[in-house]
Image (cartoon, rainbow, N blue to C red; front, side, top):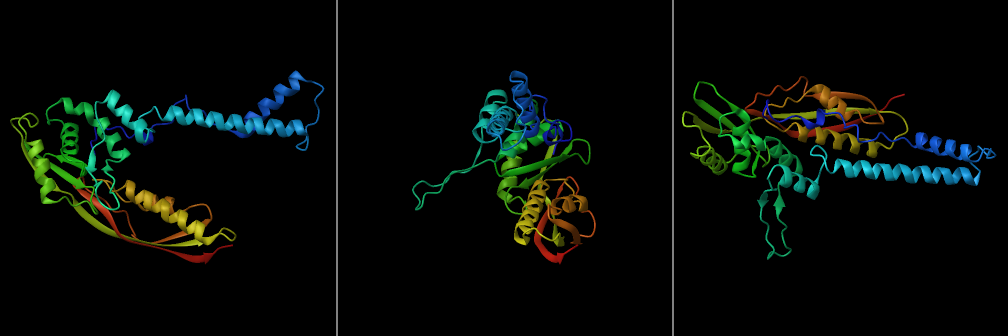
Length: 299
């Protein structure tokens, strides 16, 4: 990833315009307004019909405010998804979602087209201003590498010697090893005379994959359903590993512990890996096997 242009949107705090919602706060405000308007009201018990009406009103207001929050988020690059994101990147970045595979309407059953996912489109939009330059700055090379093909999941740039630029390509297929055809596509695009600076020699290579396995044992608290807790831990770990499948992104023990330590888990015994997996900018870590077992219940 570009270290200079692509701001990590996930690290930005939520904007002030997005409210922090709390049912009790809303309910207390409604109750205070009611008692101010009708001082004779004194049935401050949940069984009172007026009390129930206030609870319903507070819940509906909570849902309305949550919907407003969601609508605001749909207008922000960091949160927008689907067609909302399509409109943002088209309006402000002059980009459109790429087609990964066209599908086949004549097939039985029909095969729908496969489009670029939201995260990749969002990342390209962040780098889009780099595209106004020829591929000299790091971010510009990354932008043009991503623009070369929707099959490029990520790219990194290094200059081992003056005038030589090595672009590493991560494919969105499996572990991320780029095919020869994809490398040729990216190479041809980056070496176009309208993109490559005259003095640069551009070399394109595939990412080096570092395979690893994950094995962990979960000790649960007494009470929670085992299958629910195990499923939540597996989903969280999958999400973490998916997010780290990028060039130069380390796999850390702390990250895996955090993913596996879901509600209901008392203790995580991580058996593999036993240390952080350090990844260089031309490398990517790839999980080849995952084994999560339940080791009983604690106190």
